[in-house]
Image 1 (cartoon, helix red, strand yellow):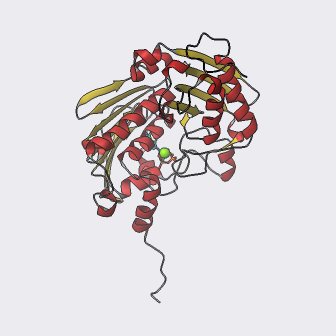
Image 2 (cartoon, protein in one colour):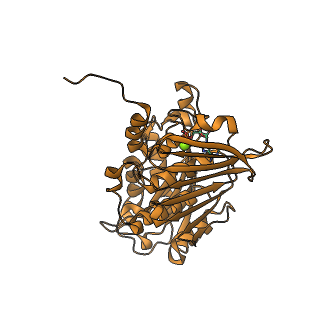
Image 3 (tube, helix red, strand yellow):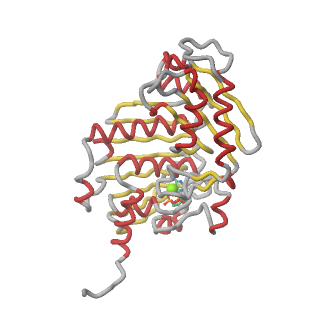
Length: 339
Ligand code: ADP
Ligand code: MG
């Protein structure tokens, strides 16, 4: 038997990084979430080469104090929770304190950041988890992360990446979802020096839907508004005539977080049931606001899944909101009139 030893921190970080960061898109997701958690009202994402060689994310959020920067890159370091009890009320997108350490362990990161209170900004470089430099420089308030050469030190992981074009497409659809989740944040996406998306942050969800999905969809929407004890629902339902061949157009956000949930898909589809042809799926963009104590977001490192404490009530609220919004509307191609 070989000797049993504890892995060194770099190895631990690289292994752990695999759970959070599996492709350029997950880097963009984590850094955009951090920007939003930092209170940014404008976030710019630039990528080159599908994000494999270059990702730069700039925000106008609160920034990080110079003394705190190295700590932010340690595993399990976060400013968002202090104890397990805080998980019950957490309203930030992040809280696991894993993203920066994970990203830095598998890429070359340069951070430039400045808080409003500080007189100068800081520049920090960390490559493959190894600190290179920390110095003062002039910088605007806010934070810029530059992530270069993802997986340069883990060739086995790099092999699993798809083409730059495919990786870029994942990022592009992530940014569309992030934009839909936060109509109050101006989001800009630049791919290979070309501006792809630029949202105004004017709070108008319908404008965003128009910008992302085009006129046909934006012209066939029904607004939804419903309030139950623990759930508030708002957003838009696509009329059945703009139904789609798959579920990718069922967008919903819980407390601003894009998630996937079979329960919510089912509630939406059941609500549309009598209006939809078989094997067709609706277009929806729904914002759900649920008291954090009814949610467990700490199910998976990607935080794309969550558990509801009051499943039936959630199902019922979504189903009712959809059903009642569609009922009595002039909808072409109504399939049957039951329910
Ligand atoms: P988490 O988001 O789960 O707290 P991260 O590893 O993503 O963990 O980030 C660690 C900490 O670094 C955050 O808690 C936050 O305090 C700080 N931070 C990260 N990104 C930003 C940013 N863009 N602006 C301000 N602070 C940031
Ligand atoms: Mg984070």
